[in-house]
Length: 353
Ligand SMILES: Cc1ncc(COP(=O)(O)O)c(C=O)c1O
Image (tube, rainbow, N blue to C red; front, side, top):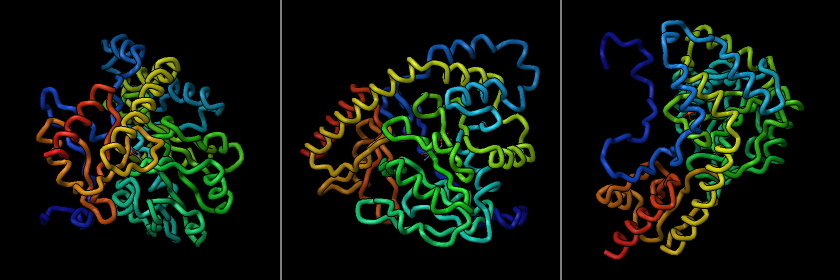
């Protein structure tokens, strides 16, 4: 707290990102990065663009990237918004579309940036309780609201909702924007993008950080009807005209076009996830059903915090949230098969000690 701060600053609850230590040989399974690396064509696009043109500002509208994303999803570029990571896209959505007199609804166990943005932008919220093993019950959203945001699959649980449920939610709230945060959708769920043509109140947010393995590039996007995208553009152009630099625009465009790389990495990751779930279950973990590039798991006798600390001593990083209801769980990103094997052998050593 400082007398120089604007009054709101002391009230904020900033998001705490997973650590990014530089320890050689570390098995880093704590921030849901993709172990397989970006498309080689994306890297080549960066090399080709890294020249004197960097003295010029980039295209403020990221036109080619938006056209490429639009073409992939059968939409027009006018229905695509891009931002500096989906975090920025979400932040703009909170300000532009999710803030109303009536409250914004989201699950009480979900991506922890939602309460952070709500505080930042003064969004009235109701955190809707998930039930039993972190299931989202649609009937609980049947109440007056200004907007809804759901991460599908949810984070940090990895649990996905069927598309029919998502559609029912959108259809039940025609006067409210329903934002679906699909950061992890490519690892097992059905995207709501095909519903955009049917529902003017649907905004779908995706990222290149996970399934395209470009967390370091910071590119995310939102898809929806023109009316919704225009609101995001108005906020963006009141904030930063150039959120995506030249290198990010060309690399993201190349990555979206490289379907073969995307498919290969996605399938390898899903196969590794299935293998890791079996190994963890054999070690007496309860593993929630995951459609994401991570699993959320709880050991039958060891505490989450103790396991995280013991793994860290063995050079394996996973994420632990010291929060009510989830403090016994570990969120473990899926690595390569070798990394998963190192995790499992570290667990075996810890559990047999
Ligand atoms: C549910 C969810 N949404 C959005 C994001 C943000 O991703 P990025 O800003 O890298 O696009 C994350 C990152 O972990 C996430 O878990």
